[in-house]
Image 1: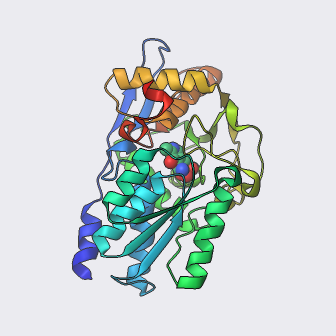
Image 2 (image 1 turned 90 degrees about the vertical axis):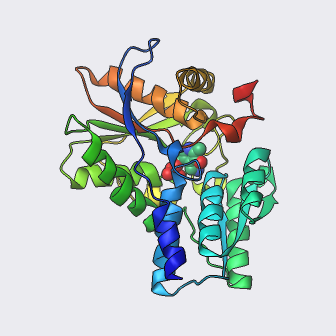
Length: 306
Ligand code: PMP
């Protein structure tokens, strides 16, 4: 058990933080390259944080079953972490997630169950809860688990504070799936004394704010939800601003960033564009920070590559 925990811990990497100024937009955005985490997304942080805590507390042990609902990135991260810990993982996702995601999860020896697309992520969450109740599986519950945001507060924000040469961050920009990234990084920066303004990047296609029960993932910018999870609703982020971003433009900028050498998925383009808008609206020369959550390979079959 100690060996498998050590293996899990050794998969932690400090992801690079780089300033990117695309010629088309001409302003600098500090981007944390979260796609360089071992499973290809920022969700490795929460999988490692939640599972290692559960193992240390005795809540789970090698051989046990883990189940989680997600749009894909979280499932991939939990599939990898569960493989490292010798646990059995079941991913519950809405139909319509890219087939690449399903293949990656199965490659780690995990199971995949799809819930009806029209019932959204809420149906996946319900099914995960049912498996947890009926089969005694460990359910991290990323939409309600405060450790999701804590992983980003302690790890992601902690790394940024060591890396950023300006010594300050004025705005932190992120799309919201569970809200763990936006809430956790903002809280980490605020706790360290940064006067940071949180900025929510929202695809126009995802509609207006609503509850998680009625949300569905944005079809064109996967991983970003048009509803608000418990983590986000209870966070009370001071001075939160929101930018609605055109899906077409987000996909265009994702392609531009890929051509510039950043192998990212669509939510990274969304984040980058919202950070550019935040920079322009702020005036002066603000330090705008964002994350590139995941890698392009899991989108080969989607419109990004058509
Ligand atoms: N981008 C992608 C590709 C994702 O999968 C997610 C999470 N579903 C996010 C962004 C949003 O991250 P968070 O859950 O921390 O809000």
